[in-house]
Image 1 (cartoon, helix red, strand yellow):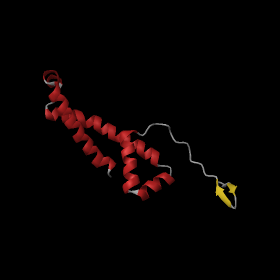
Image 2: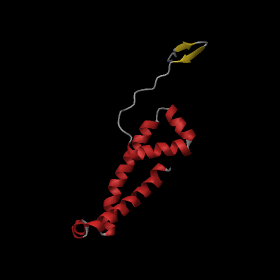
Image 3: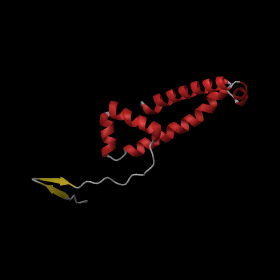
Image 4: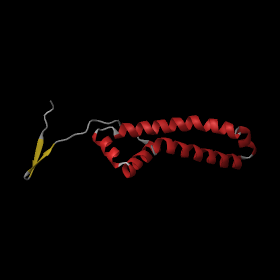
Length: 117
């Protein structure tokens, strides 16, 4: 059994608690979105994840899954919409507008499926 040590502060004994080491990888855009959602809308789950030291790995996994899904979804959506390199060379402004629309649609889908879950 792990023995807990305490530090005396005035009349109180405060436990010396330390978190285990966490990886130093950045959590990314989608991880930060998930963190904000949990903090604002699911505070009990957020607290449980923090106390069990599972929040950071959870946020890394959400960010990784969201980026992978975006990378897989965008080419399929481009093909379905007929967006290709020929259109990019012929009408670059239209291509940019269509690409921005597709990225927004893909991101909306990812956010509703992974972030606000």
